Image 1 (cartoon, rainbow, N blue to C red):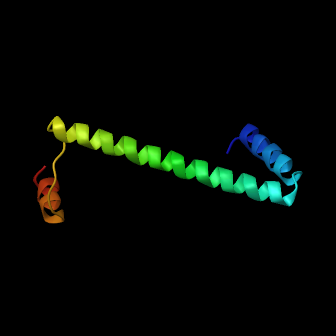
Image 2: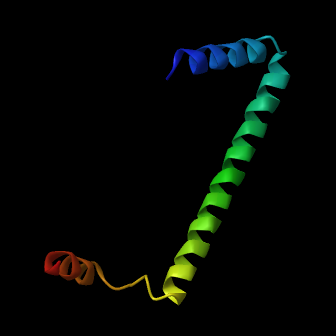
Length: 74
């Protein structure tokens, strides 16, 4: 982590610690919720990319054994 990021993170932590305990807990819950939303969005984007790859014939599917055979044959 760069010094600038470390300083910025420390400033954020200092600001959070200055809040009352109940507001700190609310902030933690809000951050967890937003992180979950971001992860869901990422999963949805990956799913759309995968569907597009299947439509374009760039994706293949099969068993683990199929994957192993494919990797060995290249």
